[in-house]
Image 1 (cartoon, rainbow, N blue to C red):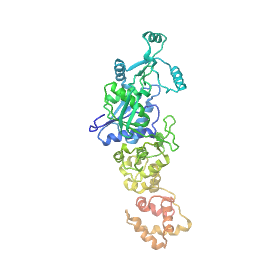
Image 2 (cartoon, rainbow, N blue to C red; image 1 turned 90 degrees about the vertical axis):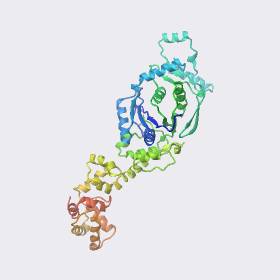
Image 3 (cartoon, one colour; image 1 turned 30 degrees about the horizontal axis):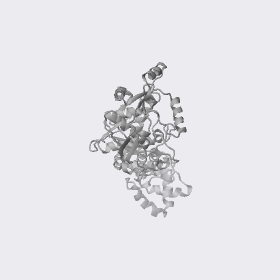
Image 4 (cartoon, one colour; image 1 turned 120 degrees about the horizontal axis):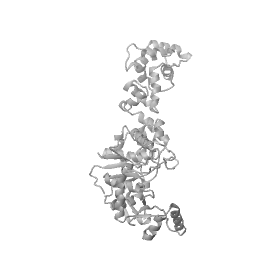
Length: 451
């Protein structure tokens, strides 16, 4: 295994064949934030050798999602640009006798699998291709058949210490020899991932637990190519509240959809990382704070259920604590001004960031004040009591005058003031809003004038 004292190198290797969902984000975040915390390198590596399904549009969408999450790769690679590397690895495996041609069609393979099942045997590949003679191979080639190429497994116990699951073993004798090269000459991820991990000096592979069995195979390929296996961490997978697994194909909880729904990236990150662990799921103030909480030993072995309802609550909680500097640019894009004072006044009442635009309209005006007939005289008198000297403490000074003059208290005092000043039933504290509204607009609204 790699030396844990060295600066780690981690990678996230998505296929640009669909939109990333929050389960993909979980893997990306674990890799990026662990590398960030440990002073290592984070590689974004596009697994785009499947030219039939990979598209530049999906690759661009992945880049947008990563930027939205706040993840900045130290290095970006495209497997489609590394084909000569894979060619060389294939030749090396062939020369070592570890890669052999097989000519069966998918229909023939399925027939054999069914036959083995009927006999009570596991549906493994029977290595019939290894028994082909030179004459057999010539005949198949003459028929126009093209081979796929399989890696010959050792058929042994492969063991490693998993950072999430502890001691793990895979008996490769129970597995079919994996296909590394398709009939059309294209490469499968099993090969390209190994070659890249070796050449990019990847020290830790953090991915979903659905890859545990693959790890036994990949360690054998790594060793056959003369490499050293990295450390592995196989985290549990996110599911929907129903228990159904997430799918790019079905568009489950895509990051694009969550972004468009107004969810906060930091809330998505927190829920994606902390769900399914022994740690509390709560809002964090930054990705650095979230990185500090990553502990692979605290990840559960049970599936992790990601609830969109919980995400909405976490988005609101996240906004309530975000500093102004974090949101200033986004507020400006929404046409919201007011600076830090406005943000601190309204953030505690936001469910989504665009809600800030409503309160900016309340501050800037004009709005239609809500003045009940029975409160008109009280509000007009309150307007006359507005202090001439305006400042951050204007609200308590004003209330100290209005309360004894009107004889009102509680809801009968405060609710009419809120309706007149903001046109809203509830919202941020008037103590924070009134200094921003200003004396002239406040006086007009209290008198029922649109301002």
